[in-house]
Length: 186
Image (cartoon, rainbow, N blue to C red; front, side):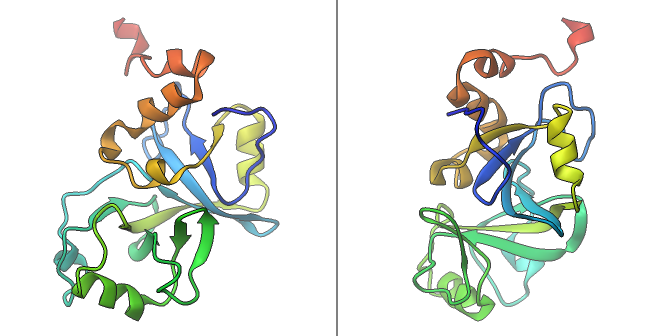
């Protein structure tokens, strides 16, 4: 799954190296949704919260997963889904995965139970980088890059996504999946 020719663009995963100590991104897997001259936008896929959907949106009930999307504007709600055909203005990220779109359509999908938790994910906040910042971080080894797949965006167990993605990448990355939380304690 890893590829040295991968460049940052929508549909690429940013995987935090095990040595990254920034608590906002420690062992995170970020789906890059936007990358351009103005900056970059992504959503952390492996920070599930213990919030019910109704705690975030009063008029919504459902089993859909709510995750911490990143450290920026944690009072904003973002969503990824598999319903690009039903949600106008949804932005395709990879085959079978769309970002955003008409929120009224998403509310209808949730209220009519047309979407399972494996079809729709909500995020509070996002990960953002200013112009050139992400490229600079990647250039100094701050992120591993891999191509996203829908099974990684909608995982059965988001908490174990970081080692699962590294193992899927193979080679030296698979070895890093077992890197201890604190190497000094090894």
